Image 1 (tube, helix red, strand yellow):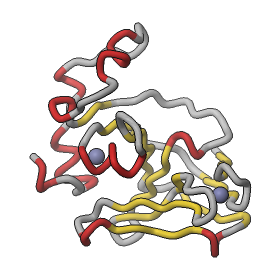
Image 2 (cartoon, helix red, strand yellow):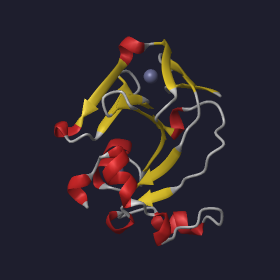
Image 3 (cartoon, protein in one colour):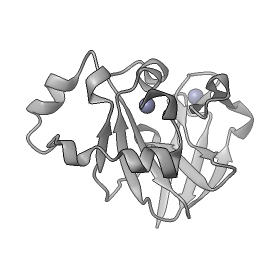
Image 4 (tube, protein in one colour):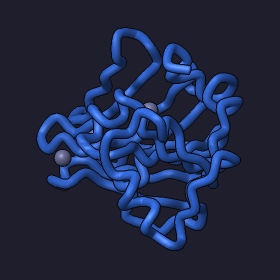
Length: 151
Ligand SMILES: [Zn+2]
Ligand SMILES: [Zn+2]
């Protein structure tokens, strides 16, 4: 399966070959800050490959205090962009950066307790049920490894 994506200003275009295994929303403080929104929405794949079609030199990657909270973005427009994490083992793609449709729905929502905004809006959405079962801490600790300081 092939996906394409780009940044808002159009300088950066990329292509992803492969399927996404997970899709998580995270309300932690870092994700709220780096998205400027109520939560981040990231797709994960351990097998898909990322290819920059244009503007690779416009992509900057920020690693927050070496804590493995990593964000890539376009230096011109600031749009969130994909990056490789876990020494290249994990492709992380901000869902909003994609221009093509995805066939996976969010599998979990993290850090509901720390969210200051947005959750009431989310609960009103009938198609997005939020239950404790969806919070998969094992995933956070073992697979992604991010935010382990916050658990
Ligand atoms: Zn841009
Ligand atoms: Zn987070």
